[in-house]
Amino acid sequence: HSLYMWSDYADRVETRDRADDNSMWYLHRPELRQAINDTTTTMMVEATSALASCGLPGHAGFARSEAFVPARLPGEPFVLPVAYELRTYQLQLGYDTVPKFLELFTEGLRDKLAVDDTGASQLVTLLYTDSGRLNTVIELWRHENIQRSQDSRRAS
Image (cartoon, rainbow, N blue to C red; front, side, top):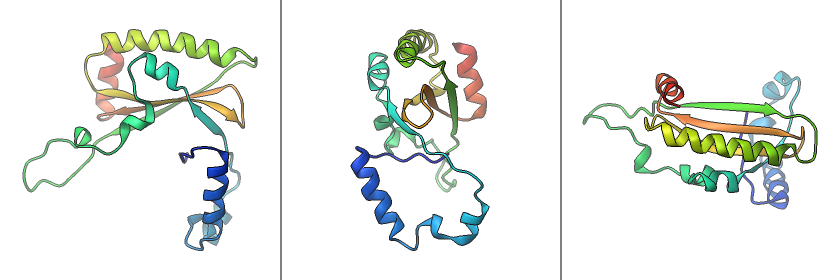
């Protein structure tokens, strides 16, 4: 998966046009293009109201900051021991399926956040499709490491 962020569709078109004109763009490499059998593009919209109602900033809250730099002794190499978990849900067809799912998800997320005080995992973002395969919802979680993801799961 590749994750890109655009402010709107016009920004996406402009960015892709600039990339197409740049011979250094990785997809211009013939060996890479030959290795690709299939590719799918899906445009996602962040469910900001669901995240905000749980006190979560969404993807904007994960800008590089000192809060995410692990403690280390002088002379130790910098290692960012994080793991990301991408969960994808393909929902049933229907016009109200995504809003109903987000409502139920938000209730469950509030409960999870209330009981999980490990600090081991953070929901980076919650997305739903705007184009492409509709009624798809994706959660992206950031865990301190793989083991701590299990600690968080047990706590909730």
